[in-house]
Amino acid sequence: MNATPSWMGHAWSHWHRPWSVMHAARLEPAAQAPGALADDWMLRLHYPAWCEQHGLATVLQGFEDNTWWQLLGLATGPFEQAVRRVGLVLMFAADARTRLQRRPGDDVADIAVVRWALGRTPFVPPAVVEAVRKARLPSSAASHAALSLHWCLADTPELQARLRLRFSPSELQSAEKPGHRPEPATCAWLATLWNGAVRTAHKETSS
Image 1: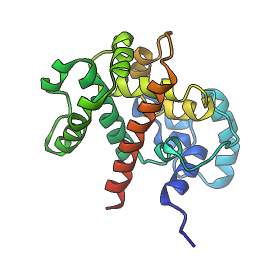
Image 2 (image 1 turned 135 degrees about the horizontal axis):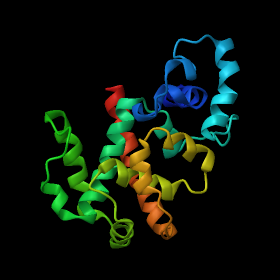
Image 3 (image 1 turned 30 degrees about the vertical axis):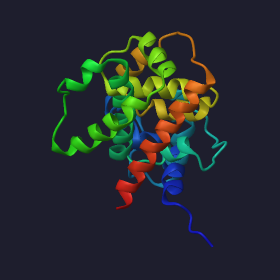
Image 4 (image 1 turned 180 degrees about the horizontal axis):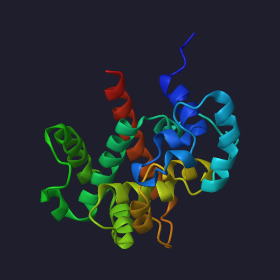
């Protein structure tokens, strides 16, 4: 009998404690949100009100073994690495000049992420490149990743709402401007790209 993948437990926890993995730019004073060390009774008391405040569904629905739930199961560090991988691929493909730019936070540890992105950039379909260019995003990997999630998760708003909280508001502002959603084939390719980034993140976490 196969053991339950570790990501499932993390995804379950992140669903019921979304504040534990929320982007730092969204953090509120501790007095206004459930604390990380709150006991179960306090969590049950605060959880519905917190979800209502942030527009989240309280009941877990549609839990399954797919890329998006595995993404939800990533801790903050691996999640940000997956975001960076996907975002750099799209940013490099949309504007070749960005491949030569030095970005804030680049260091020796980032080399593997950049190489991962550069190795996939030549294979981005023209339709994806065109869709991303039309969005006119800033040169930010997170904004490009947020845009792709905005497109891919349009039909799963409950999960999308929770993953949105893992981005800063400024990154979402440029990525979620009203616009035309691309063709299903574009979203399908983006989902495959995310799958690769998420699998890589899980491998690095377990190694």
